[in-house]
Every structure is written in C-alpha cells, then in structure tokens.
Image 1 (tube, rainbow, N blue to C red):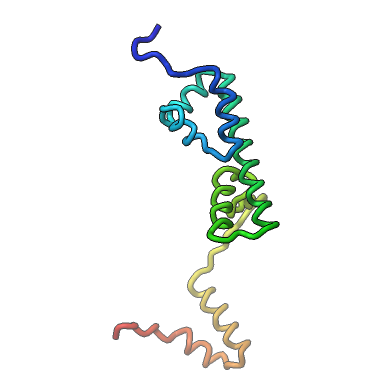
Image 2 (image 1 turned 45 degrees about the horizontal axis):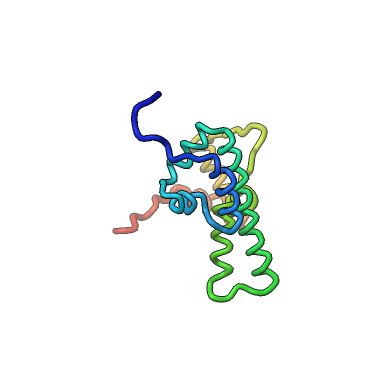
Length: 151
C-alpha cells in the first residue's frame, strides 16, 4: 500500500456530487464543499470508475440546470445581468451545445499559382485598361515607383 495520508474518498460522494450539481453547483464547488481541491476530484475519477461515471452524470445535471435557467430567462426575461450569467454558465458547462466558436472543415486541395513580376504587371495593366486607360497610361502607372510615405 502506498505511503501517505489516507484518501478522503467515500463511495457516498458518487450520489452527492450528482445531487450537488443538479442544484447548480459546479464540480469545483463540490470539491470545496467536501474540503478537497478540484485536482482531487479528477484523481478520484481516474482511480474509481463509479465516481468517474458520477462526475459525468453530475456535469450533465449541471448543464441541465443551466439549460433550465436559460429557458426561464427566455420565458420571463433576464433582468439584473441574469441573462449574461446564464450565457456564461451555458458556454462553460455545456460547450458542446452552446459556444460561439464554429469549426469549418475543408476537403479537397488548394493550389497556389505564382506569377512573375512581369506577368503580374501585365495583369495590372490589363485591369487598368479595362477602366478606360490607354496602354501607355496603364504602363506608366505600373512603372511609377511607390512614393515613400514618410518623405
């Protein structure tokens, strides 16, 4: 048996954490409630499969609690910063369902064609000519050095 203090873990915590979170308390707040830190909860979840399952259920219950708060705000209004707090709670406790970040996946290939300076200049000249400039005027614009902004 490893040396050190005995664990404060109790199988009773399996249901206690679910109940605590179903009333809106966070996993970290539960840790504080029972006198341990958040890392201890994570360690217990690694060592005790039944506690790990309870932590997952607790997180789902907490997300359900925040979801109920959101429905209440939608129905009755959210005065005094309540709506902002609910948004914050949902984004943090149910990020798979409520988040601003969007993920866009791209399939296929992308090719990048580069142009020589001469070919680029010719395209610019053609574009300028399309606006009504003569070839000579367009070539003069392309040939003009860019003025130094400081000078």
